[in-house]
Length: 389
Image 1 (tube, rainbow, N blue to C red):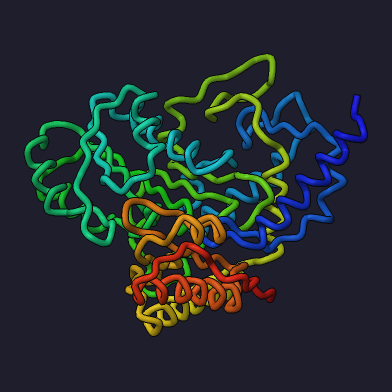
Image 2 (cartoon, rainbow, N blue to C red):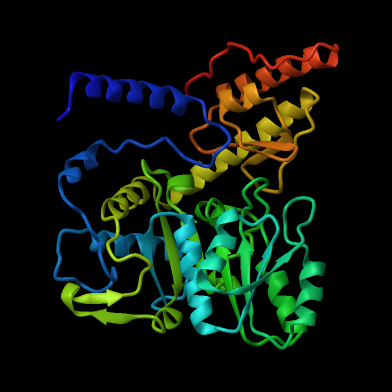
């Protein structure tokens, strides 16, 4: 039974999370949501088991809203009407696993090509599926090295190709260009291929960029994975995977006791996250998402310029929310929860990030650099708190 001590622990955890949420700038998670109208649904054991497009004998779920979420996202990704299928996943890793699973069923002898900047979970997914793979070099900005890909495809032109395209790498938000990749496949007359786009962060706002990156179904993707808790915003990890229906039909099988089809990775699936995503997409709409993208990109440009003006060699890829700069101290990394790999740290200007927070971070970086430049290194950040919008 719960004791007073247990309740105090919950209060302490709440306060700790509240403080931590005020100061994370290095991870692609949106926190500007209000889920009050959905709290009443937490009393139900929501489970969208089976295929969201096939009714089940278990009716305590949100599959109708899940179908609407899939339809909304499919339109964003320029999917041909009636030719795609999808479902709400528990995050980008599951969506990527699903895309690779379909690719394996379609091309069991295929080779997966992915760049060295690909998310760490992809190698794990490839291992799960028993697929053969070849890692391609990355360019300095994190984008796939197309010359290395071309040479590798040339050597293996007699084998089916499974392309894992990054539409926003983890550290630098680099985007692989599907048009260039398809050109290489055509050059070497590789007819049997499958393209999966990992658009975990960028898939939510890339449709509003000009020029629009080549990553979606109109560009030739066979499946696309997007995270729901990143650009859209959700209190829990979730995502959406969309795939061409003809590929999904290869793996579908009927499960009698649930009265539905087994077409997803898991059996039982979260029925609350489709409700969350439906609510967010209804709340924001296309125009809201477009404004959201524009405001975040404008602030990312400001953050990059502010750092450069302070003598910090910051940079970002074209139309990216991620600002990359030299590795900061452990103290600063912990204070602002900045992701760091090798000699690089980064700031991700999600829609909830404010100019005051950017200024506070840059002021901390300046304060840290000044003693170092004067020959007196320090790891002590300023005590300035981030502002609120």
